[in-house]
Amino acid sequence: MTVALDTAQWYPAEGLLHRGTVVLLPGRGEHPGVYERLGRRLAADAYVVQVLDADPGASPAGIAAAVDAVAADTPAPLILAGSDTGALHALAAAGRTSAPPDALLLAGVPGDGAWSPAAGSPPWDGELEARTACPTHRGRLGADPRFAQGALAVPVPAELAAAAEAALAAPPAVPVLLLHGAADPVSPPEVARALAARLPGSTLATVTDGRHDTFNDIQHRSVAALIVQWLERLRAHGPLLTVEGAPVV
Image (cartoon, rainbow, N blue to C red):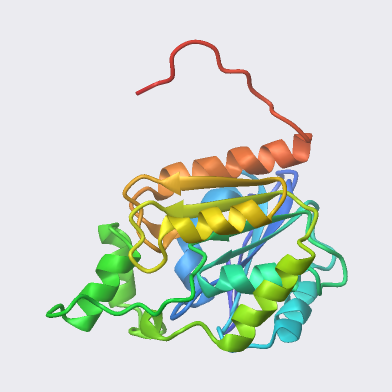
């Protein structure tokens, strides 16, 4: 892994054929290193993972240029991913990059409303409760000097919301996987359902009892497994498995 102030990368083990590239844009308060667990997981399945700094107030053109810079000469397919405001950045950048992404992966898409901790709850405790139920990730965020506590209560910048809305006027004709926590207190699942209805060919997966940070919630193993299955279907241009019989419960 290579980490700089504004990027983090995870690569497959030496000798593995690279199966594609995921460029991921973090959300409010986050930095690229927050996605180490997901990056390692996808890299273990031979996908290159590039996580960029994506300040909510960054210009859509600047984000698109940053995606172009890291996506050059990377193995296809190129998947542009984002969480929270990073998901809006990904949606807005999809039509601005030099070469359009092959797919979009959007998690915890924020709505228009502002979020604040419950009355009487310490602000940081309330934010952790809203973000994730994973004790490991909670511990990491609490001890991370680069993580911006309180950022989740900052409204989505108007320019970013407008850029994402403009992108939906002519939505990218690529597969889209939307992931959203069923118990997300920051952005209710209805936000993701409404977005899915506006993106032809999209797939929406809601995470049972999931909070806002879908990639880093307590169900992160199931979420990562679903992402890998989706990536493999993208490469194969269709389903790879036919499951017969009763599902595992």
